[in-house]
Amino acid sequence: MNCANLLELLADGPVIAAVKDGAGLDRALSSDVPVIFLLYGDILTVGQTVDRVHVAGKKAFVHLDLIEGLSAREISADFIARYTAADGVISTKAGLTRRARELGLVAIQRVFLLDSMALKNMERHFSQESADLVEVLPGLMPKIIRQLCRTTGKPIIAGGLISDKEDVTGALGAGAVAVSSTNPAVWAM
Image (tube, rainbow, N blue to C red; front, side, top):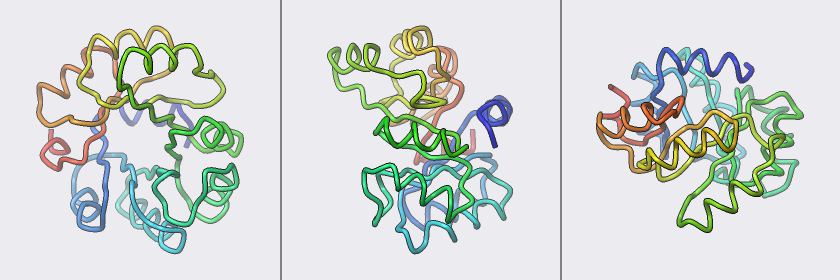
């Protein structure tokens, strides 16, 4: 999978299921969402979990920072590329997403915007080479999403605190290509 393929998939189904445990994964696998963000697991089970996602006909993205046994080093991206069939990765660390891109994985840079200083730093220090897409948390800021679409030049995913149709339409209307949510009610939208 490449970034263009992912964007085509999200154009048809812009809601991403973010799962934090096995029960959430079971619900996501039986939902209509095309993409699943795996926000849990360990190095012993992540490959099997990715395989389950693929058997269900969905794309799997592994959050490198949240997989037990992986470190904040580039070798974590190498591990996912070599020992799993993941379609891509998510990380808050630019070095990890940059390495994932070098390995042919779709890379999503997750950014937490806590205040205006975090926004300015993100805009100033964001590297075009570090990621294919940017996931912005919290995702309930249409004005900021619009601004980031312009300044980063990257497709934006809105995540965090997305809980109803108004949140979804607000983020998509502001220019986000998708929303990610751990809320199964949102997956059905």
